[in-house]
Length: 200
Image (cartoon, one colour):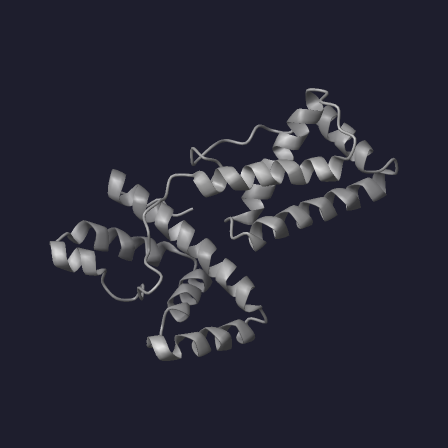
């Protein structure tokens, strides 16, 4: 996961009794409680998306997992929604302090060789990048390549056209591209460390 200071973690499975108690805290009626849970999850995802914490879905998973653990430990909670958003703020702080992964420069066009690879004669980084880019789903690869095309003076308008074609806001487009970038960075980091791409 990218939502912790230490990088990757394994989420603890939700305890059934704690989850049942969480739903009860949200609403006494089972159907309304389920709807309230989905609403809470969406609002937490939007919080992370707004603060550019990626992937927001995984950050929301981490937040709700911690909330459920607290409930399972019988931590007194007066307002479960406010408590959940308090946990989300802590998760965001951890995400912001996490070790940085391999950086893909914002101005770099992923369809061209990396300057570092050319200057240093290091083909390994370029090879890993090419393999990881090729391993992306077609739509993700197309998205990130289209996002970085065009010269600097036309790049903004190109990205606006791309956002309109996908019926996304500019911020939503940036968020979607950043998720692909993060995935690509993880893959390149794993490939350069182990010699094999890890695109997940």
